[in-house]
Length: 374
Image (tube, rainbow, N blue to C red; front, side):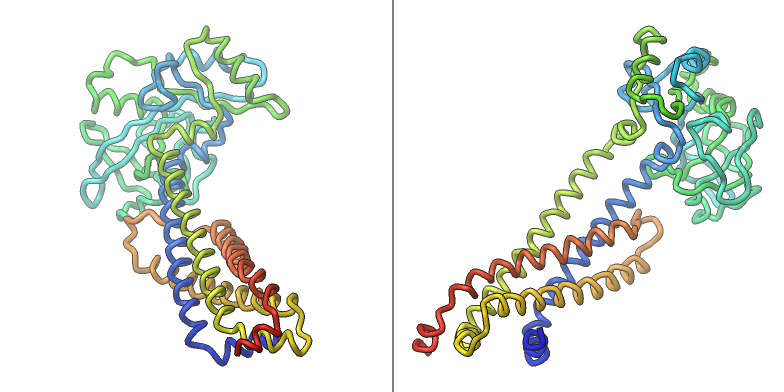
């Protein structure tokens, strides 16, 4: 190990080159992961943090809230199904609104406070009370737009402003700043803003269901669809998240890019150590001739790989955080500790595997022939 580290100190420029290359690769991986996480968590927060185990959609709703329509009276039927702990109606409306500082893109979600389907708690202020009209809790992203508790936002096409009574966290829908209000308020605003819905006073888009502890979500889902006569499709929360437009496709695309980048990192390390081993063939032969084992020499290469990977990780993480500070708030990036830990482990493993390709070359060095060739 001392010999391997001494070589790195004497050849700073050579090893610095591979560190620089890996820093750029790690920086790219971290930024791509942050962008993927930002898009995923920004698009799915409203569903992920809803407290629901199941979502009930109409069969023609394609597992998406805006396409689904169900009678509000179905909620009472769902509540009687064995395995159901509680049920809440949900409705969404996307568009623009007028806030204190101008026009905003936003999503308005109606839910039943205290039931599954909406935020469980407010990060500041409070949530709307059951039956409280024209009040809402705003997702924290509204703060970036200058919105404060007590401000009022009017959805475009509606004449009734909605008063902000609190803020929530991680509860956006489709990357849009999201207002959480009561189902009755949502329905009133929707009917004003979308005249084609007028007359559908007793409808909702879906139902969020909390399953009793110990009950099977799959069996409960089947029972709900059976109780409603096959008019519905009930799926679990994870499937609902992946059914949001573009979520599954974008996550798959980013994962493939990240995996490919790790493969490139492994190839870069493998080629570097292959070249280094080839250049040091005479020195390695001398070491073998005086008693150094192939295992000892291979361990030195592995130590160098780990040191290079670790140093590259530190610099890559610092560089990515600096880049995050420079990005505007409109760019959906989320740096998560769990993702960073995965990148650290994957980089160290990839670096070790890349260095391992040189081990065979080391073990096949013949001291006599190498020294004779010198």
